[in-house]
Amino acid sequence: MNDIRLIAMDLDGTLLQKDNTILPETLEALRAAKEKGVSIALASGRYAENAGLTLIDHDLQGCVMGANGAVIQDSPMGQTLFLHTIARETAEAARLCLDQMKARYIIFSYKLVATSEVGMTHRSEISDGPRIGRLGKVRFGHGRDAVDEALRIGACKFFIPDQPNLTLLGPELRKIPELLITRSNEFNIELMPKGIHKGHGIAELARWLDIPLSSVMAFGDEENDLPMLTTVGYGVAMGNAPEHVKKQCNYVTDRFDENGIAHAIEKYVLSGEAKA
Image 1 (cartoon, rainbow, N blue to C red):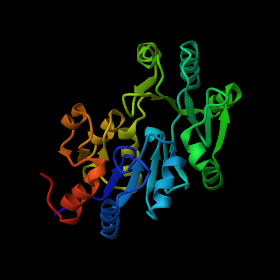
Image 2: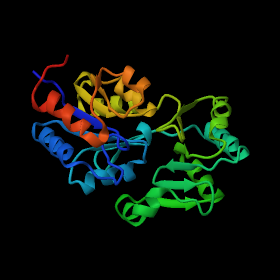
Image 3: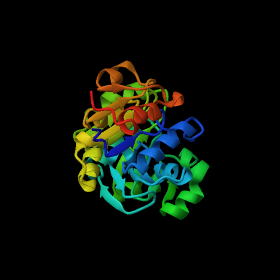
Image 4: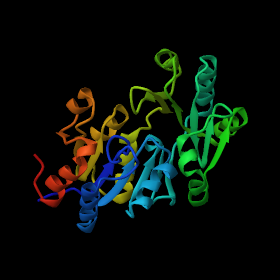
């Protein structure tokens, strides 16, 4: 008998298409799983309020794990269940390193998204800023004062996008203690509190939902998904994932643009096929 009680999904390259929509077959499979009593959660590198729009826009109910597990909400734009931030001294050291390397970055803090430069804007502010502000009470700031405020509140995550010196940053950032360095694709770097990642987040959420990790199915496609995929009972790599990610997962499904999530749900949740 099938034992899956929670489905957790990364967004970009996993659940969402490039236009931020969910394929109809995948959406239908998720709704069918919900009807069977399976809980749904998003597990994204995006900040929680940004990620939560996916559930709102597709009329789905579920929990939201944002900033790689640093923030967990019980529903989109809902109550914050768990919040983790980088230690102030560590965050200041990361900021100094990034500034010295002339790297542009974005900080996700609690209800604040701060960019390192005036004129630099996170894509969510451009596409959905007013709505995120209204529904999620999130503010957007730019430049040194905004970064100062984000560090005072507590940085959940630094996001460093593609830039010429990206490959030089890793070795310098690794010199900073108590900092977790990961990435959501080959063109960025993400800085997290040490020990906080999607694996830690899914464990916290599963405990809160009173669901054993052995009964959790998770989908992902990148390095920052691996801690989650290797923690749950059913860790599923997307067909578009790098080979090193696939090799560390128990299951591999089709690509994100070929209804990979739907096919796995149909096989392991809706058909009741037992775990291999």
